[in-house]
Length: 473
Image 1 (tube, rainbow, N blue to C red):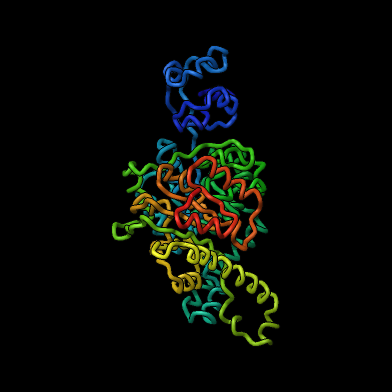
Image 2: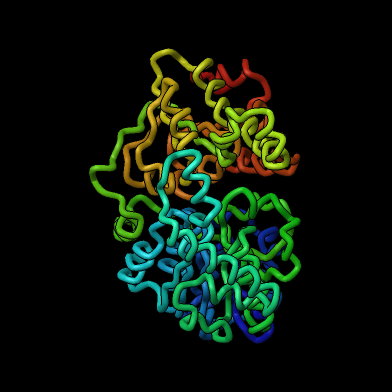
């Protein structure tokens, strides 16, 4: 399972599954490589475990003795979602325990400083930095919106300070380049020594991610730019604007990738790995009191990231709408999308068995409007919606569940991340929702359906009703 490339030894990531099932065809895919932490191994021991590799060694295609493998060097993680942070912790804990690694967290929950402190206390990372979400989310714009919509909730001086820092970052980027943006947004930027890193793991479309990649390419050309699994986007979006400079994708399910790139298979999180799960519980602050029993239920995963029409425009006069014409048109479109996404749950409520309980897992950063709308429906809200679903599933009783969503990666990747053996049906409603998805998204879902049992993409409401009532034929 090893080969020599540019005087370094690498391993094909499929061997992480420990399965002897694809023979010579597997050897043909050996271009999908990943550097691994230092260790030595006698190739003869490996060949005893995988007899089909012995023929490859006899042909001279494998070395007879494995030398010590190089470490990955210094790694920088940049995480902008809860799922990315969970994956970064998984990679560092299980794949690179002895490598120096730093991390930037920006989860946009408003408690980044406290989150960073908890991550420091795990001693997994050399340096932990964070981006205060208030710089982007609690500016003068939000201050005036809060007055008109919800009452006075943000202090004026606080909003002014955030606005100044945000504008400083924006104008700094335009004038001085991406490094000025990073140094303004990241807390304690002097600790971020970009020239030291050998790998950057990140993914996303937020300015922080984009400018960090730009800055790294300007400062440290030898650093490998790697993508960090964040869900559906990394699998189905070959048009990622910087895809041409990407070296490797760290993903949970390489077979579901819809474009060709080198990959590293991130290990599945095992329920028996209690030490690591307790570490996750500490970082994300999951407590015993948060345990809920999800067995024998339907769990709907909301993706309503659009916002309702602001209150000052909902009941505005014709003159006000005319004065704010562009804003009104934009918010009108978002308002329509908001209700379309919220109402997807009605497909579930209208077609389930009457005695089946329905839970709703909100998006980790829902608007108050989304919370209010779901509370009006006959569903139970999962209280810790701020946590990754994967963490809830690792801690709470589950089984005989139907996970339903339009496009949530928590459902799409559930079996790849934590629950391959769970008695769970994963139902993707993309073809029944009003939101139009690219065809490549359905190809991605169909690939997962072939890999794991229990994935369904119903094309009619009648088929959905059968699935919700237990008919999986």
